[in-house]
Image (tube, rainbow over all chains, first blue to last red):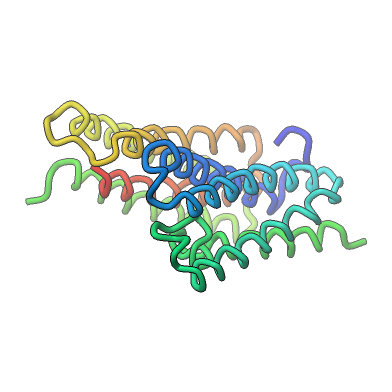
Amino acid sequence: MTDGARSGPHQVLLALYALFTLAAGARSIVQLTTQYDDAPVAYWLSLGAAVTYALGWYAIREASAGRTGFASVMLWVELGGVVTVGTLSLVVRDWFPEPSVWSDYGIGYGFVPAVLPVAGLLWLRRQTAP
Amino acid sequence: MPSVSTQITWIVVGYAVLVAVLAAVSAARGSERAAWLDQMAWMLELLLVVRALAGLGPLLGDDRPDSTSTYVGYLFASVLVLPIAMRSVQGDRAAWSSGVVAVAAVAVGVLAVRLQMTA
């Protein structure tokens, strides 16, 4: 948080993105390395979620310093990911014998994964408003 | 009678909820982060360290956790999250910095419960 604006709601977003990078990253790496065959699709999707959160953290940090370009793409990608994986987990149950981070729209994390990109986009809209 | 670890976990969770609520209220009111909130956060960290030390028991005994790597991950994360969060708002007393403390407090509360569940 050295480059961006010093104080503001983005600090809370950054804290949440850092936490979810850690949570999804650690979870997917443990699952991919110790129980790969149980649910490979779900585990790879969890790793994808972790990478998305890491990029989202960077995007929000950049946006807080006025460079909003990357965040305006990345947050939509994240929202698309949550909606797509959430829907797939309901429709193609065979792919998810074990849940992924975004299964059922992030139910395992109190739906925070679904709220996060929306909160980010709302913050970004205020950030880019003249 | 629940085990000592379980009792410490519930103390940690209760205290984490208290810190999270006070931090969230402080942020919502828009007031500067007070020194007492920092003191409460560090007190919570102390409790987490005690919980982590108690959590070493299952790793040393015969009744190991089902997934040792998951358990050790929660053990480390439970003591690291709060200091990292406090470091990130060091020197910044603005209202939103309390929001970061609130997020970290909720996170360590959840981590304490997960630690208990995976033991």
